[in-house]
Image (cartoon, rainbow, N blue to C red; front, top):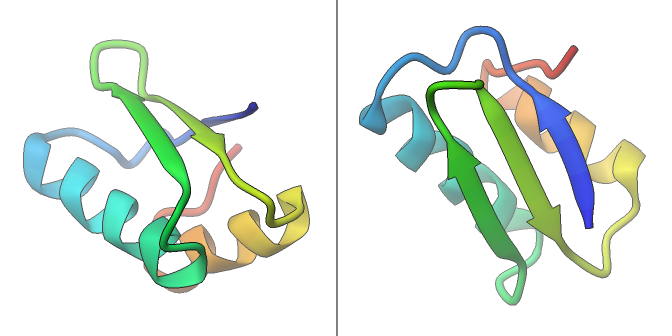
Length: 63
């Protein structure tokens, strides 16, 4: 499982857009969002660089 901190994730709408960006990359990905800690966990066959690129393209670059 890959873990990302996304400082710009502040609400459920952000979380939904982030989840959709990951699902567009890998429809079978499992996603866990923790809004209070701004943490995203992704279980995907895609590599970290691909997930990072998808998040960045969606406007939510991870730290």
